[in-house]
Length: 139
Image 1 (spheres, rainbow, N blue to C red):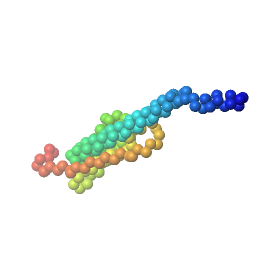
Image 2: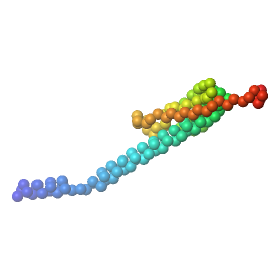
Image 3: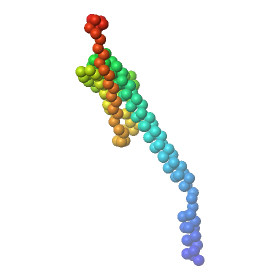
């Protein structure tokens, strides 16, 4: 009888579920925060990719008229105007015989400074050089 009296309360304690709702709530909250952080990081990546493409296109338009240096400068101006999004992106321009290419490459800003496996951002835009007849040039 004494043994049965000691086993019964122990069995009741093992089957007791008090406190499990708190633990389940904390686990659920942690999962929700993790999903939100990944969602914000994905949105930041998409925005940075859009900024890079815009900078490359604007740089190519400027470079087609005024040369590679003007294109690189214009793309850098667009990246600076994007605020913190453009900080990890860098523009380069190259002129060929008939066309000009502006490339923007770098990394998107990160929500937390951890090594998330985020792909690098690369955007390129090319346009033909604009050439005007000698009699139409302003100088």
